[in-house]
Amino acid sequence: LGFMSLSELANLERSSVSTEAAAGDEAAASAAAEKTDYDYLLGMNLWSLTFERVEEIRKLLAAKSAELDVLTATTVEQLWDRDLQALILCMDQLDAEDAEEAVSSARLG
Image 1: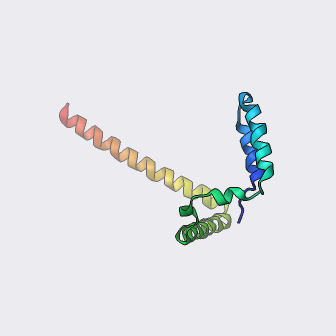
Image 2: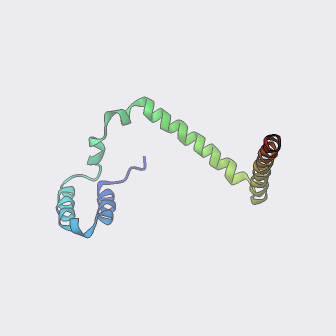
Image 3: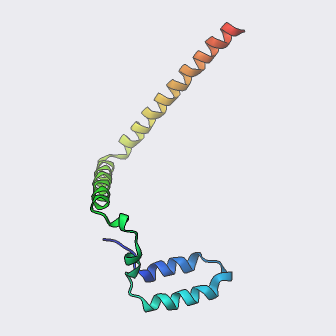
């Protein structure tokens, strides 16, 4: 399922802890060595393991996979054109807002 083992989590934790807490990390590492690599899964909240949550994550995975498939099938030129069209649309909106502000300031002034 792609879960990180406890030893990998301990390595991440040790790399992010400051030098002042180095003695505490050694004690945590020795305590972690006594546990199996996936014991941290047993300490997870039960709400994160519900069937509904798993289904929600699977739907999210399917959506992101579909999005990735579309993106990998799109050429660089198509991406460039799409970005340019979005930029043109935003610029047109800004120009329209500027024109409205100019008209309203001309009426007031």
